[in-house]
Amino acid sequence: MSSIFVQIASYRDPELIPTLEDLLDKADSPDDLRICIAHQHSKEDEWDNLDKFKDDDRFVIIDIDYKESKGACWARNLIQQEYADETYTLQLDSHHRFVKGWDTECITMLKNLQEKGYNKPLITSYIPSFNPQNDPQERVNTPWGMGWDRFIPEGAIFFLPYYMENEKEPKMGRFYSAHFAFTLG
Image (cartoon, rainbow, N blue to C red):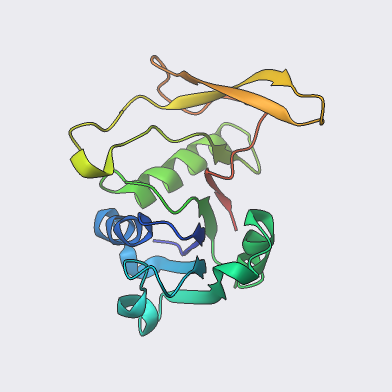
């Protein structure tokens, strides 16, 4: 298995630790992961403690008091400075649940796209929702696509997710989601 640089910018997210536990538990090759977290937290949030991961060589934890944060893109930039030539990279939010073998599945999907002639494929989307209090029973299993909805006067684009009910493989898209993005390192 090849190495995967996992990038997570977390801002006081109560789902960060369950996300990390599920990420490791569901990976086919958890030892091939290198996980970098921009941990924007408050000492008042007792649930937001990463001590169990601090001595784990797979983890790089960038410790940031939430009052010092300069936003999601700033945090993601700090994380990307830690990239160390891993074969693949996965950027995701700090609130996810995974399927068993997610790492193998992502790599296989990417290699299949390369075999079809896409030299630098990027797999990105809004990931289906889940209810942390009732997972996996209330997990949505149909992937979402990202469709353009409208421009707002400030120049931003609004996206409208839609269910990709009959898709068996990734399809070409125009948009990037920092919520989930898997590609070559």
